[in-house]
Image (cartoon, rainbow, N blue to C red; front, side, top):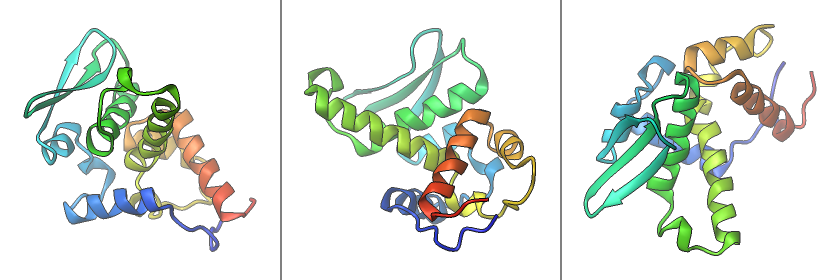
Length: 159
């Protein structure tokens, strides 16, 4: 599989540049507390719904401790998006704005969990590519599949 027509999105470029400017080059470097500390955000694990909270200058992402590690990672990136790209309390937003923020956070999760500059080092012809991504990036098979489908769709290529 080759993707000569694939053009990254502005959000994808923003995520890649952020990682590269902070020397994140390989999947094993995507350590959640390390990423969060670049934004002065603490990461906590507690047995309730994942969320981002800010109290004055104190910022934290709480991840549901009862979930598997892959889901926790995905929720971390989702909440990180809210922390770095969104303002205001979602509970006070109109439904349309809340939906827009959620859609943005879902796209951000794809790009931050599986960054373009890292996944392009893989052989896209490999039959077990999705399994390798899931293992190397510590995220779900479903997220990896969604990422690959999006790349294929945006490139206009088929297998």
